[in-house]
Length: 494
Image 1 (cartoon, one colour):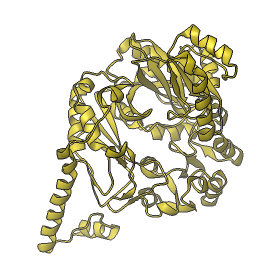
Image 2 (cartoon, helix red, strand yellow; image 1 turned 180 degrees about the vertical axis):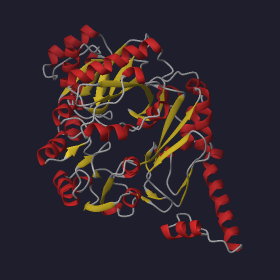
Image 3 (cartoon, helix red, strand yellow; image 1 turned 90 degrees about the vertical axis):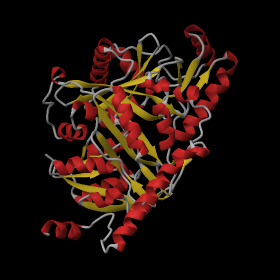
């Protein structure tokens, strides 16, 4: 087992990984940039090392600097979290060459599956169902146009590298195909340094359903059931749940077997996610493989009772899986909402700034993976995610009610958040009835604006808290939001 792990990330995911390491008795090293000097993950770690300027290319994306810090601190392994270097084959390859254990799949697997054209070819060989489309880079427009006519419009032009909706265009008219390919390629080149594109049949009214997998280095592979991730805004997931309201036992088994086949075909090791598109008839098709821990992994942990980070670390240390597919089961229903520093009244633009007040929801079945605190300055340089709010309950209806209550008690002042937007989605009849297709927000919330009463909830909570603190001070009681170790110790002694 490792004695020390460096977490090559920041924010809530770094904090979440550190907590599992602490349970396992493993020392942790945090890295931080100029702007993250007082970040939560820096306080949580056993050691913290400055890694560079605030610009990601000078810090969290700087492979040479990251390797140097790993060696400097004597860490035997590195956990990349998600984002930044998590799916960077060059970083994984450097770790392998330097004798550092990369907690994730082998570099070649990351490289193969990171190229969507190569990944499609691998899945064909593995017998995994694919969306009709091309299996090579689009270059000849005459051939591409002929293929589009064959599979039928609308078609989807996609970047071979990257994700997040960049380099993606829906084409409904043959006359628009050439321009769509050109603009998608230009965007992909600018975003990923790779302008390669390919084409798929566009499936309207579909669902985005993914399967969590675990694979060890001894040939054992299992799946941990599905997650429904169809509630998306600009191709970015914002609400996830498990089980999917559209997946029955038969489909769950078939998709799980396909995900295991995909992992075996790619030579996968460690935790990963095989993503599928499910159409209205219940047919499913391979979309891509995320070669890392997913943002939404906590909902799988909630229904299975498993710690996926612990399994990642065990697998990376050479241990075999101690469970078989027959050992696994899911209980109840879990939902996750992503809490971003975003302004819902300005098209959800990032809302950096100082968090002047933070009150996190608590109670049975509530988990909040949070990377910020009252007084923290949310930087403009990075993804604005603040936390992942997760609930677990016996049924889907109970989980929805619990999540709405948790969101209503979540107070964040100083930066804007989409909490009111999330409440409205969860409260809608369409969501409650399980009509969670990928066009959900465009169809049901095309011009959403926040309810004035909802916007005042956080202010009311802040005012109530301020009054409580004032009464404590008036009574001579010390009011400390974040007690230090000496204060905790003094309370214990008393």
